[in-house]
Length: 319
Image 1 (tube, one colour):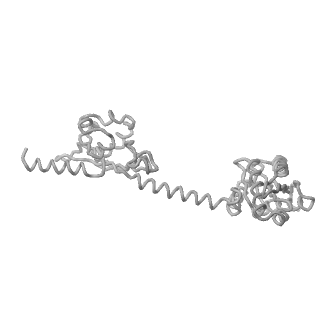
Image 2: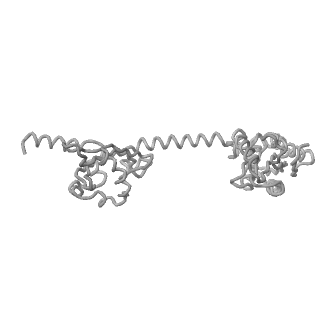
Image 3: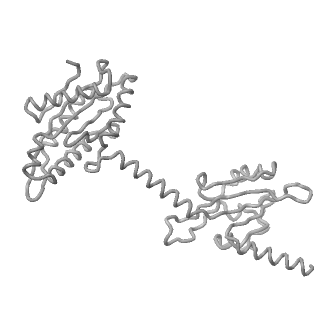
């Protein structure tokens, strides 16, 4: 071997060792021919221990059938193939470069597979380049998580944890459209706290907030996940009971009414009791709009208030 050939081998080896990208060369049988320093560092497998052997002998967790199918265009069409972490987090399950400070236990990877042709133009080998994209992946996931949290915050009432009025109204409009198409009962419920102003005037607004939270907890414990419960404003709440007629809705309403009556809110040495009034309206063909339906429940709530409070009234037909 000439001095120039030795020099060329030296800089090629130096390049493969210093580059912060995994480089693997495989033949048609997926026998490893090149295994650079990056791959050695992260796999703890020396080039001498893997070169000349099948890649799958050392990484049985890689789906051989899947990888061969992915690599087929490289060998048959001389076309590069790209694998991104969003589709598959990694090809090689390597640990994170920063196991203590990183939010991930493994390295997220993008992979490029491209053909290596012989002087005759035939694709005899394939090169895999493994890129560590852990920082980018975690950053994107953090942004997505933050966006999801902001989306949830925009829907939730901060005091009660129930849906806020804007989002509840959006969902209620959808419930109305669905009720028109489905032949299944659904009932709207409006309720509020009796003599709430007196609670605020006597015990203060913080106590009033505690009472609102207590009622919200009663509602959460009384309805199903398929129901739609929200804080409509102040001490007023709105609920849609899915697949529930007025009779069964009355049972749910009574559960809420009796649980609220039995609840005591402790605040600044005071034990505060409260009651609620409830109005019900089962959906029917007479409801020409979502607001007309809800107004029937609101009218029923008003009737419950003027009739003495701490009771339930249903209004299923327009006046």
